[in-house]
Length: 204
Image 1: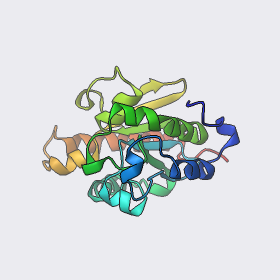
Image 2 (image 1 turned 30 degrees about the vertical axis):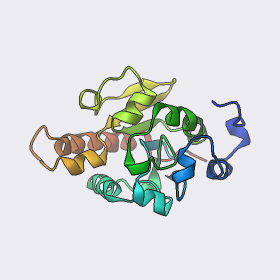
Image 3 (image 1 turned 45 degrees about the vertical axis):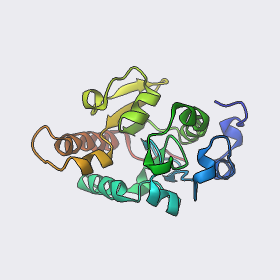
């Protein structure tokens, strides 16, 4: 973790969010309207991590509320997962201009904030949405088409579960067997099974 951050036990999510709100460590701070810190249950056992906010998220200061977020909500609803029982965030907390992929330097600069969120929430399962967060946390994992739907160990007891990013589903509308939508349906059922077996919220 970045040495400029205090140890997780001396912070909470609210104070960390306040720190992120004043962060100017990378150029994304100059073009943002709002930081998009994350939201959900601070005791959630399941975290969903995307790559970065889009335009709607930047305007509202909330993660996954644009078209991709609406598609993600449909995926959640299919297996009766609610946002209230999970925590959802991104690798970078400010929108890359034009919704481009965040650069390595931007992700390196912002990653201590995600690390702190993970340390504070202490999830058992991190669902990575798309290639960017998957390969950032697991550089040797391979592409999302190969590793989606797999439980992969990360830093001890936490497991990573890659899924297609919902924006990819918007670009690939087919529901045929083997399509991204079909595979996502199978993958989110696995998340539902994990929640049923482990619970969704850690005891406070």
